[in-house]
Length: 415
Image (cartoon, rainbow, N blue to C red; front, side):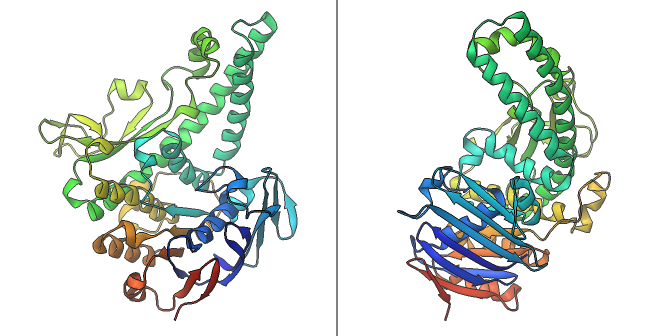
C-alpha cells in the first residue's frame, strides 16, 4: 500500500506530493489534474500510461522527463523516470532495476474506468490483458513463459517480414522457433485456463449485483488463440506459407481472447455442469459451467451488441471488480469453486484500486455496490470525482478517508 506519493512533471502536475490513506478521494474539475494523479500511480506500477502510449504525450511540455516516486507502508521505495524519447529508468529501494515486472509485483494496480468501451468493442488486447493481470499475480511461473514466448514471436515475425520464401537454414530456424513457441504456449494456456475457471464465480456474483436482470444471460468464454488439441508447432508449420504472405504469425497465445456473451431468451437449452463440447475443446475455448437443472439460451452473440451504454459501464465494472476477491482469496463463499487453483505466487501485496470519475459514469446504486465491496477488501483506493457528491457514500464505508482538492495541478486538503 502506498504511504507517500510524489509526481513530477507529468502533464500539469509540476510537483505533487500526498500522504495516502486506505481511501483517498480527489475532487476537481475536468482538466484539473486529478486523472493525471491516477495516471502517475498506474505508470509507476505498469510502466505505461492508460491514456497514451508515447511518453512525450504525458511528460510536461519543455521538460525532459516525468518522475513518479512512492514509499510503501512496508518501507519499500519505488520510482520510475520516463523520458520523452521513451527511455525508462526504474528503481527499487534506490537500486536500479531493469524489469518493470519487479515494480508491478510490489505495487499491483487495478484501474476501474467504466467510461472506456474499448475493452468490449475493439481488439482482443485489452481483454487478454484483463486475464493476464490476474494470471501474472497468481501464477509466478507465468511471466517468464510469457516473456520467452514474446521474444520468440518477435524473432519469427521479423523473419516472416523479410521475405516470402525461406532458405533451408531459415526454414530449420523457424521450425525450431515453432517448437519452442509451442512449449511456452502450452504452459501459458494452462495457467490462463486455471485462473479463468477460478474467476468465473466471482464474475457471476458481480453481474448478479450490478446487472441482476441479466445474471442468467451474460457469460464469459476464454479462447486460447489456437487449437489446443493439436500442438502449436504443427499448426504453425502448416500455416507457414500463409504467414509468409501476410508477414506475421496469425495464431498462438498472443491471439488469446476473453469473450463476453449474451444469451437470447428466445431459445433455451440444457448444458451439463461439467461437460465441454468437442468444438469448445478443440478451439481452446473454456466457458462458464452451469448446473444440469439450469436452462440456458443456446443463441449467443457478443454482449456489446445488445447492452446499452449504461449497461456496458456496469459490465466493465463487474469484470474489473470481480478480480479483486479472487486475487485476495477473500470471499469464502467462492473458495470452494477455486480451491483446486494451485497458486505458485508469494503473498499478494495489497492492491491499489484506481477509480476515475465514478460519479460521472455510474448511478448511485452501482456506486454504493462498488464502494461497499471495495471497503470490505484489503485494498487501497484512489478515486476521483467532479463533485463532492460521492463523499457521503465514502464516509459510510471508510472511517478516515483522505480528501483532496485538485486545481490547476495543485493538490490541497479538501475543506
